[in-house]
Image 1 (cartoon, each protein chain N blue to C red):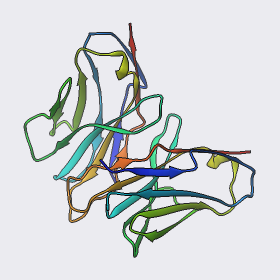
Image 2 (cartoon, helix red, strand yellow):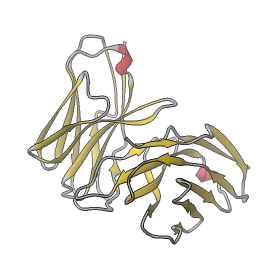
Image 3 (tube, one colour):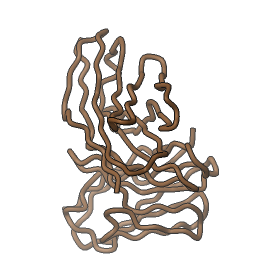
Image 4 (cartoon, rainbow over the protein chains, first blue to last red):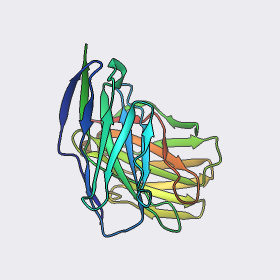
Amino acid sequence: AQTVTQSQPEMSVQEAETVTLSCTYDTSENNYYLFWYKQPPSRQMILVIRQEAYKQQNATENRFSVNFQKAAKSFSLKISDSQLGDTAMYFCAFMKRNSGNTPLVFGKGTRLSVIA
Amino acid sequence: DADVTQTPRNRITKTGKRIMLECSQTKGHDRMYWYRQDPGLGLQLIYYSFDVKDINKGEISDGYSVSRQAQAKFSLSLESAIPNQTALYFCATSEGGTNQPQHFGDGTRLSIL
């Protein structure tokens, strides 16, 4: 079974600064996908970024980027130029890559507060 | 993105009542999921369905049942609600094939007294 660990229950960052959220996972699979989801106070679950394990290049989406270290089973999220609207819970998630989509396995989340 | 609609948005009910949470989507996605979110525990999978005739248990299916009435509709039932089922419930959908992210509804907050 896969497990996802987010070791930082809460973090804070000053507006315009950079913050990195940690995620590690445990799997015996070689092919899989990793995701970061954002849950603002409105409680929606919003996909932030995704990474395919067979791609060495780290994914980026505007101010969001990941540091994917496959050997270390690490998948951290970097938020640059933090904005007040980035305040949210952030969940790291894992999905096996096989003949069909398998459900996501989520970490317990990191609550990020962006301070003005 | 998929338009995933969950009803009701909030519900308060009493122990022992039968509750149904509904989910519908308008994008024709094959796969649908039900998750439960508790504070400090992230999201846990209850049930999932890859098509109308396919239903699979997730990690916390005890006390729940589901019905995939059509491709677009996936209902979650609590046959006899108990207080520790108080949580935020999410429905999600995804297309078939690999590398398809899940798209979530806005959640149903369920409180059982």
